[in-house]
Image (cartoon, rainbow, N blue to C red; front, side, top):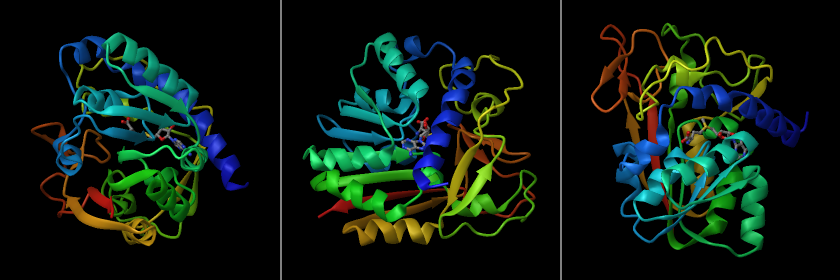
Length: 285
Ligand SMILES: C[S@@+](CC[C@H](N)C(=O)[O-])C[C@H]1O[C@@H](n2cnc3c(N)ncnc32)[C@H](O)[C@@H]1O
């Protein structure tokens, strides 16, 4: 299958899971109306001041982080391939009383169209489950460089590729991701919001959908950290921060994870430290 078809299949898989994810998230409208935020300190510290800034939130899912960015004074445009996620993002914005714009598109089409139309942003941001959906890192990085204003910055916080080498019981069973190798997942996107039992639901955890099974498979693309950094640098962006974290925000990927303050999940004591997330800030000079 061509990459575009794989990404289309991913759209179907994401569409199928949105309802299950949202079923666990509690009263989000109220959470936002009362000043709640879904952003973690790691991305906030890389993003810096957002007051009045134009922000492109790429792969925004159902818009919780987009609305949190908007609540900080940013003028946010959220982009995602999933019809269900974008439709939920729009309804959530109305419930929350927070203004943000949401556009449904494959990220590659959106970056190309936005550059062609000469729309520019001061900040681009993406987080938590991003790089594994990208079929072409150079086109992604080049597209981001094209839509940034001079002096603008891109911030990415994502799960560390090293974490992909372990099975859920911390067994070292897989090779380090590299080369964008395709990984078909017949079981599709899972209900990780449900299995994280509160880690991803700051508005409160609801039991919601049980035993979700996704009828739509998906395809991941495997990239190493060096490849991500090289793609951004190769697009002319200046890397001003690359941070690695020995815990993972929100999601419980592995057995026995203990919850630290602020919904951070850490390995059990008998597992040696391993980076579970990384953050990058890259600037258009
Ligand atoms: C794990 S979620 C990202 C989490 C998100 N940051 C949040 O705040 O919930 C990954 C998102 O990427 C989107 N996605 C996957 N492939 C895409 C593509 N080719 N273009 C645009 N969005 C895509 C999915 O629809 C999904 O919403």
